[in-house]
Image (spheres, rainbow, N blue to C red):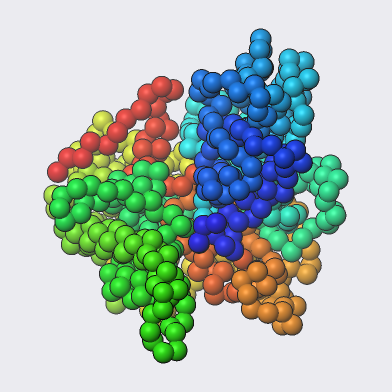
Length: 592
């Protein structure tokens, strides 16, 4: 299994798949074909390897939506979403002539009655098993999940949206499957004044109650020591917009990484690709570090990884024939370490080149605007004076848009006259939606005489924490996580959709109950869980906060999820497209 997922969502999901889908099919000792749709392909890829499937008796993995050769002597396992498209493809496999000996059908979540009836009517005699296994989310990292729904942003925030309610319904179902997979029945709270958040909290709470009533296997009818917080993207527009300088967030902002694949050049000019995921131990250790620390840490961490894998040296220091054999067996591992080191040295150099060439000049202004004070703690009295050097420098259009947005956010909106001047200065008169469309999220862009309707959240005092001058901003969500864990969330701002059990009192109550237990990750995390769901996308810096708060509290595990993962450029495109009619889109053209 994946190195970084030994104690996390991926391991839990893989175990659940083994306990349901694979356990059912193992009853007949025959090699089988596994047929997946797009989503379940990604789901399985995220939590297991082909070798894991082979050891469970699965010999071939096929795509449901592609033409496949019939194998009438083999049984097929279908693992798919319960959609009309998937059901139609399944029926096509058995009519007029069956492609496989029999079908074991597993749906990611609840299959609507009409689709179930259609499948039964056409293929009943071929179906040996038909089950819903309740995993319709993607475990992205040990403590991060996503609904894999980039279209949700437009559905939730577009003024032209016709499917907002259906989108919230789908997201609610996905969150329920996450809770079911974790075996949690959490209390639910949401951010006041978020219509989408309120509606989603209500849907999730009702569906959880229904799930635990219907689930015959569940012994937990009451609430478990867990809290689900539903947060709207508008709560913190700053974090996904400014330049973040921790390794993972910086990489996904500045380097064109697609499907977690980083392309880099070797010294001889040849190109190679590397996957940035939890299989890579070095990535797991480096991803949340500040870029200033990363380059120095790479050689040290490679040595640590090598040492942890090495067996103790033989007492006399001589290598026997048996010892030599062991060394040879370890060579692939050594090669892997060398490759990882090369990848991360290359990525760190790429990021430092971007930083020195362009980003460094932006960071001070961005941080001053975001924090509202300079590195010495002096309040920024005139944000325009902070913004002007960025506008006058030949930065690309995207960076200027980001700086203008931070300026507007710092003021809780600006005047129409000032806004027009800024749009002209950045030369986006025809593309002003990059700035204006934030209003659809409920973020003030134009100031109004009364700003009581939008109140910035009060921030935790972190003045005693050491930070880099170019990285002083802390995502708002970290404050919220810490307040929730310490049971300090204000009920007026965070109403209860359903009460948490009285035993759940953040980290302190759990710690008291945990004193007799050991300190392995599983022991520490068997106390309580805080699940944070961000409607409208989550940034890499916010994902990092879940790990930081878990690490600081030990006995309360924080899991963060969202509709999708944000990068700054991706978010700007999403914002711009909110003003477009269906089928229209636009890309930022970087102008010096």
